[in-house]
Length: 312
Image (cartoon, rainbow, N blue to C red; front, side, top):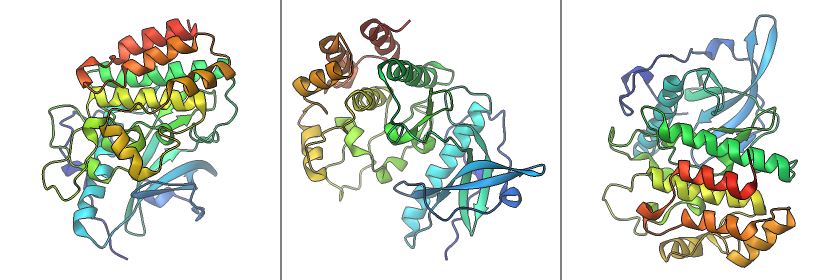
């Protein structure tokens, strides 16, 4: 098995002052369940435990794969380092992201050790009635707002439901920070291995994979496209472009076709009790403008959603 060598302290991608260092928990990890809980494009998540006194605290262990191709390994390494640095910058008391307890090395592979959330991500959380869905959506938007408006401002870069975890009290917690960055602080390359294209804004879609030019960099505006698509999926229970095959989705995105059809979205929203479903569509539609500068900011989006959904 090849080893993916990483040195967290050497990475300067985010240009952040790090007030909190993640401890190495390699020697404190208990047995790891070899049944994979979730597979990402370049990592696997397993359930395990970390020794805390005489007890084992349940954790989720995000283990990054190693590849024979060194170029791919470099991209995976960048994702890992970027995610670690964002968590170190945010610190342990950040209210809107999943709690990260530390890092580890497992059989030569770098890993991030996170608190285990029994509810899982929003895709698998099936107990959302209208009231709790509204509260959940607002908490999600608040989390993105904090990333976008805190100092320094952070672009998430890979927002979609599998990166949204449901806390024990039903709030949204943001995870998957491997594509996060501070605009203007680094050359962005990690988007080359993102697999969440259904939620991607048109300006991020690479049509010619043989093109050697630098891949598009996620922005606050592309985050808003993905956030609106995520909210629509929570309301409808369907992924963006759900009637289309993957190869069709790319063409639809670059052609300016919205991720959802208005009529079917409005019907689905009414079915779950949204009284102002057409107004909700109008709010989401503004985040799907082909021109990124015409999309709502997260502050505008939150205000509009609170009004339409009747959230205090």
